Length: 225
Ligand SMILES: O=P(O)(O)OC[C@H]1O[C@@H](O)[C@H](O)[C@@H](O)[C@@H]1O
Image (tube, rainbow, N blue to C red):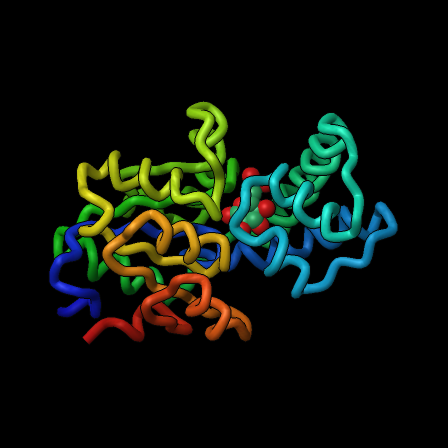
C-alpha cells in the first residue's frame, strides 16, 4: 500500500490534537469556557489564529495580546492552569476518539515499517494517546513536558519537530509532518521538513497552504492507495 508521500520520506511525525484524535475540539471548548469566565468573547477563529497548536501559556499570551492585554506571568500561568483543569474534566467526561482515517493511516505506516513520532505542544499527550489506544504506534514522543524540560521554542518554531526527527534518527528533509494547526504547518515548513501535510478539520485549507502545507487533506486515509 502507498502512503501517498514522496519517496525520499523515511519517517513520519504526527501532531496529536486534531490530527490523530478529535481533542482539538475539546481544547477549544475549554479555552472558550476559560476566557469567557474572564469576560472575553472567544470565537472558533480566535482559537485557530491565536491558540491552536501552541504550548499552553503561549496560547494564553497570544490570545490576550490580541485583545491588547498583557497580564504578568503568574496570571498567564493561572489562566492556563485553570484551562487545563477544564480540559481534563472534559476529556474524562467525553473520552478520546481517534479519527478512524488516522488509525487506518497509522496501521498502514506500521505495516510499511515507517518510524513514527508524535510531536505535540500538549502536556496531556500521554493520557490522550493511552485513552485513544494509540500508544503502540508511537516510537518517539515530543510533548509539552519535553518542550518545557528542554527549553524548546513551541510551535510555530520548528524546534519540537526537529527534536522528533532527532529522536527517530532521521534528517528533517527525510521526514514528513502531519498538522492541522497553522502554527504547526509553519513549524514543519520552517524546519525544512521533506513534506508537510495539512489536515483541514474546519475551513482553512487555503490558510494551511499559505502557512506551509505542501498538500491538504480532510482525512489522512485519503492519501492511501
Ligand atoms: O494544555 P495542554 O494540554 O498542554 O495543550 C496545549 C495545546 O496543545 C495543542 O496540541 C492544542 O492544539 C492546543 O489547543 C492546546 O492549548
